[in-house]
Image (cartoon, rainbow, N blue to C red):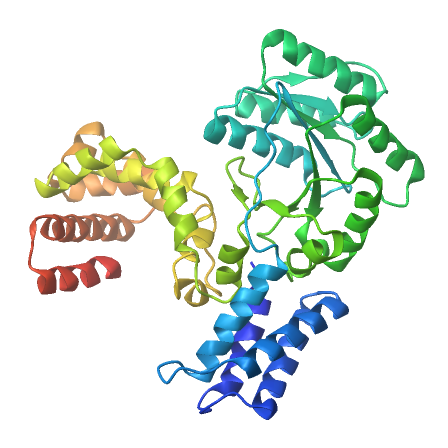
Length: 444
């Protein structure tokens, strides 16, 4: 996410490295590089110029503390301006009403239908809502079937009916939701082009016909400035309440994320990456600024962990570790919980300094596939008692998992070392020794 922009901004800050203070001359060169980085990221020229003008005004007016280097001060100024450019603060979705009606609009291929299911699942899991989805895309082949399949995956009902009038379908779906007691209705609509007058009239008619509490405009982040211009036209017709940025896991230049707030004066409310129905986040401008500047995003990482890890279960695991009873079954459970948090590389990049180190490393959702295959090839007794794994058993496990005996041996060795280190860390109160153990565990 924003790898190229992050690299360019980092290079621009290095211009001030070694400088004793910020001056008109050295800040001008830095700002020139920042402006180029923004333009290459497909940010609107006027927005990029205003952005750098604001930075210049602040930078030249700053009194640099003796403990703070000019480059560090510039990073802080750029961070705050980035956060402000993207909205400053998080804006929540409007959930007042019974049922709450949310209308989803956007371009063709922006990921609307998938996001519709993601949002329903998110509000069901995090806000305790009882959602119903309405299949209002009557034009795209298999759109209704796609929404039904997604609904089944998260156990959320989908209302659909034969017909070509999406206004009547949406109205009938809301009536059915009231009858069944669903307190949230999310209406998926057909993708359309801003230049398609007939389709734009139709989405306006849907809005008028169902009076939604919230209208979200879905934008494919990879389309950059084109998406921003289209959002302006949609906003003129719909006056939508918020923006959703999808496909942030792609090779996006970031222009949409950085420009859209200024152009349409509407907050970005959600971001989405990947096809997993759990891969949806509330948008926090400050946290996104942290990610763009390579500072990680520990707060979001902790929140994701808290959502997946049960406190009582964590206590049980800690006790087992202290007694050296941590098993391959426990290890497998931890892996599965981590996978639910999202893409492994994205998660790792939220740790400050790690994102850059992983930039060129290929880490996909199958990062744990080999480990899981080896553990699944073990018998229940072997998982619970790793000491049973002699040479003959390891050969059988390698054959059953499609891996080599060397890979099995490596996993068992790393597991044993990690289990020993975890036990020492859990029981040892000596701070210096614990630090040494932590470094060993990090190596594993």
